[in-house]
Image (cartoon, rainbow, N blue to C red; front, side):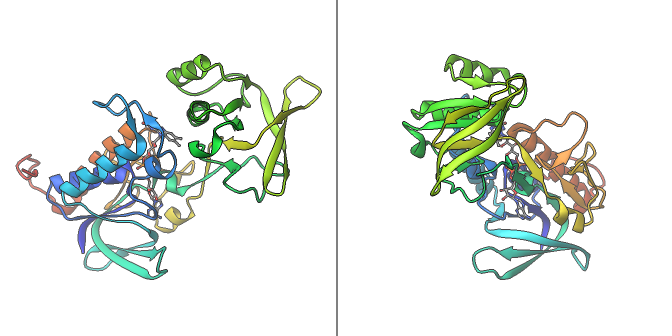
Length: 327
Ligand SMILES: Cc1cc2nc3c(=O)[nH]c(=O)nc-3n(C[C@H](O)[C@H](O)[C@H](O)COP(=O)(O)OP(=O)(O)OC[C@H]3O[C@@H](n4cnc5c(N)ncnc54)[C@H](O)[C@@H]3O)c2cc1C
């Protein structure tokens, strides 16, 4: 039994774990995949430029440092365990049932408080839903960042003009691919710094344009057919590797089963990261509140606040002092 159980080991969950240990509470982080979250599972090779104090760090390395830091503070962590059920009651307060994704066995954990930090793990990448898309292998079609080792010398089409699309285009360009961007809106919607880089790289782009069809043969892509608003004839763009970064659809059925109220497919929290369930807190990409900004930094900051709220819930201190902090 632990005092706090954290579902999800991305930056939000790992930081929550660290702050639980700063308060000397026992904390277990359970992750369905690899601990590290999107940093390792979505864009491991990408440089991160907005982690305070570090101007440039590769995502995998930043995740490694977060994990090492958590380990140093004696946060217990386990990967490959997907939390399926959460029940209230019993001596501890909460029981969770997780499925070991390797052995398929059921694992049960008890805790007095829960922190839900499942981030993008609850999200399914949005598909184009066009003819030719189904059944294409990851070698030619990805909904994540492009695999740099696979794109050198290739014709890469990146669909999506937000930060993910802009960063995918940069990565493919740097890896030596011939990149074209397709954006449904009239302009890019990512951060100015990302737009500047793509402009400097002079990556060709088509605005107000949507993919209509993927031409493929025996698992390889030949071209994508695109239509631009106001232009009668569709355009055929030769392509051997397609990157689709058009956001994610959320499936929060599991979270609803756990009894937490959701809003616009996200978990509504207050300023203390409290959910609608007493003793259950949430942080990171999965939460919403006024002004929410989905970043590594905000995920980590919310993890800290969630841990502090869990501390108040579990230990119920008479007065809040800093004397219990890890020394
Ligand atoms: C391509 C791309 C580039 C980005 N670049 C940057 C950047 O440069 N700077 C920046 O600040 N932000 C960036 N972001 C955003 C940033 O990665 C996220 O805001 C951040 O990862 C959110 O952290 P999190 O801990 O909430 O969620 P995540 O990182 O998504 O971690 C959630 C974890 O929960 C686990 N999980 C999910 N469901 C379950 C379950 N049922 N049981 C157990 N575990 C579960 C998942 O396996 C996952 O490991 C980028 C995002 C993308 C997609």
